[in-house]
Image (cartoon, rainbow, N blue to C red; front, side, top):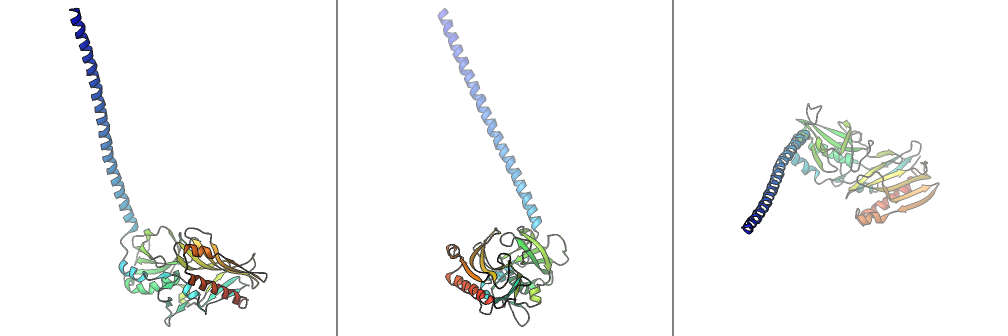
Length: 324
């Protein structure tokens, strides 16, 4: 009898142990289920919040950028063939350089061409630098916009290549007539980089001076005049800017002390590097050449480079006779 009760006690203890185990398992499963449910609900709410934030951001962006740019198709057809390049004119035989050693300026002559009506002419109807391209495009688009929009030339700094507040990069601002303030009806057209859209799209630009026309067009200036150590851009290609510069030597700028050079700047960087430079110091001439930089990056064809190199050499040899 005693033995029978001992077996029952053992069975009861075993049963209780099993029940406790099952209870723990059920509690564990419930905990996991609650955790998964929480994660699922959290994901739903998070997705809803993210969607709400995205929609809000899109609404804000749309409000900032304003309406679609007018005549976008027509504009793109006009600017598509254009190319930012002054090389084709620069290498012409009638382009020459003179130095003014009193005013510390240099002048590149016959670098622009105008038709009989005073309109800027592009080499092959497509090559030019920013001011020339903007003037050319202005004339093309004026009939489209003249009734409802005002168009002005704007000097700008652009964070890719034209970085300083002394930049002479020229773009066009197209503004709904009567919209003197605010960005809702303002658009920017930059023929140099083939960009056109609401002013809100141009956050990498800083705009300075507005003008109804460009001085060099009004005056029909066929030359460019700059102070010593200033440069003019010649070509933008593959994230690089090629420029022409005339510099002083050790603070001196006269017929016996000057440098003529091609320089190369990478996008978003201030400092440039000489590609080809001829220097006269106290009447002694020297040369610096970095052909590999051009060849390795395939920025110029061999023919283009030789034309530019020959032109720099010609300008250097002739310049001493044209300074004062």
